[in-house]
Image 1 (cartoon, rainbow, N blue to C red):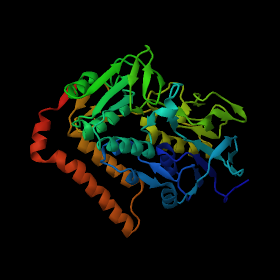
Image 2 (spheres, rainbow, N blue to C red):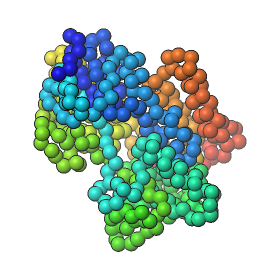
Image 3 (spheres, rainbow, N blue to C red):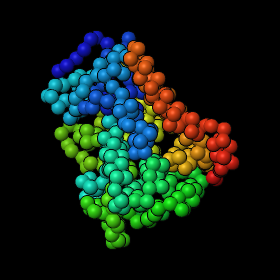
Image 4 (cartoon, rainbow, N blue to C red):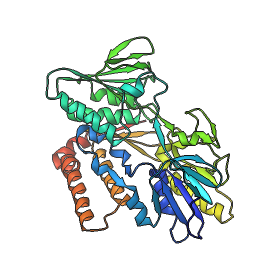
Length: 409
């Protein structure tokens, strides 16, 4: 049994956005914090789709978890947690780590919805390696004249951003054909305003086909079958669907639950099984389940850290009340949608603002600590300026794009 020091011991399982923001709120002077994740890097998810168009190479979107934890004065353990009790964690190495409180923020995996062949033949756009592979396949296709049929499964925010970046780089290449597939009849159905028409309008004269209202029944190497029985050719199938919780949250004691089941929690994020364990993000099943938990990951991480502190000091826990957040969905260089509660605003100029905010957010998560880091930081900024800000914000471009800004209600 591993234990450290005399301060209250807090374990955080999963070092994604929720886990890292929880760690940032817990001061090393007051708590002995151990953050556990099987992967050495956190990947900056908001810009992953830009790897497909070549605006990012992917490596600049990977930040060292060990370095982030060292800066916070916490301990990083690159292991896999295989079981959780009310007082300790069991690692894949056989070691156990004792805790006074634990936060599970393990995020999610691709939800292939049980579609046969999807896990084998469809490519994920939820990680750097997946997007790099997609980009490699598309770049290779430019070397020949054979048509490459690219299918994006999922017409939510992720699917629209993936399709947008593919179109940014390849829409004028005659050997590319694109199609978007979703069981829903509308593109971006969760967003206010009729953004379905806005997206379709941008690609009206491009080689893009929308196959809406029929989900995918199976995925093959050469294509896929829809639920209505129709076969569709596809040389590159990109899966941009939802997420499932990681397997850890499906185990309590030694009793396994179905893969889809999330960890049941109260409105305070406290686990129904152990009062010392809190579950947040995609791993949690809230009483009033939020449609896009990951969208609130930063707030959830900070909030659950506050409740852990309250638990350890004997105070009453608070209920999580998610704030209304605006959402920004980019459609390559064709448009960017800023989604509010009840309406949306469209302007390609918003893409530069989004890029600036995300670049600053990435650097804030892992600020430079030495001369080499500072040089790398300047390199990230200059690449963003060259690829995004300058082309978008020059006076001629701004005038044209301002006149195309639209309001959707």
